[in-house]
Every structure is written in structure tokens, then in C-alpha cells.
Image (cartoon, rainbow, N blue to C red; front, side, top):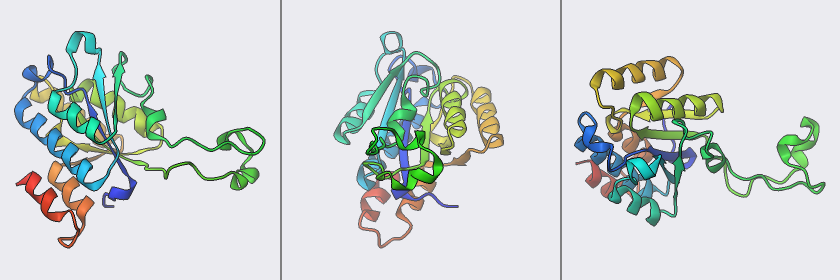
Length: 208
């Protein structure tokens, strides 16, 4: 199964100013997160960020916040380690139009759901996600997205923890629970699929 840019959303977790200096290989981790954000911008993939307790840990790095703003994305301030309890799932799922009776499609009996108009925007069920720390906020967010029946693709070279051991333990656990482990370049070339894609050269330039 390959990634399809038309079915994806990108979530970048907690690349915060007071956290990144402590992250193992943090400079490269951040550089790959910026590449992912720029790729999403080029491919028109919806982009979201999260920030853990920003009053204490600061906002996400300015280069990421700038791209998210340019993409008309949003950044979720959270206190829970997983972003899901604070509203990420609602952002990732399209709002349902109301049926004529005023009810929501998901609350209707199954035999009546076909009569309800489709969502206001297409559903994108593949979540490409990366962030810090891998074994805490990234892990808990990804596992809860899997519980919510999203497909979860973790971009390993854009993830970081303070120690390599914690990072790698998180990857093992994520893979064991059904997440796909990928790299920044894998995401790029699967979104493109062909050298004839109109965005091939701009995206290729990002990863050279």
C-alpha cells in the first residue's frame, strides 16, 4: 500500500523552541519536519501542528509556524500528551452536513444514512505524522489516531526524543500496533508517484 496525497493529512507534533535543543539529532529532525511541511504545501496536503503546554515549552519553531500559516492550517495548543483529547480528531475529520431532520449522519440508523448529504469536504483518512518527543506525545497521539480508525504513517527521520533508546522503543511499539514507518523521502516520492508530476522538481529540490 502506497501513500496517496489525495487521501493524506500531515500532523507535526511539538517542535517547540524550548524542547528542540534537547532532542537527539534535533537539527536534522527539525530540517526534515520543515521539508515535510513544504512538501505538503506544494502538494496541497492539509497541514496541522500541535504544541504541548506552549506557555512552558514555547511555540513551535518559527519556520514551521510560518508554513502552517501559509497553508491556512492550524496549530493546536494542548495539555494532554496525546493531541486527540484536546480536539485533533475533530480537525482531521470533515464536518458532516445535517440531515433534513436536523440530526447528524452518524446518529441515524444505518439504513437511513445513505439519504444524508456527503461531508462538506472529502475525508482524508491517512495521517502522516512526525514529532517530538517520539516516545511521549508523538506515540500517544499516533496510537489514539489508530484507535479512531485512521491509517497512521510515522515519518521516522522527522521524529525525535532526548535519547535514541526512547525514540527507537517508540518506533517498535508503533509498528507493533499497526502504524506504518516511513521516511521523508518515501513520503515525497509516494505523493508524487511519477517524475511527470507537475510538482516533481520543486519537491525533489526540497529533499536534495
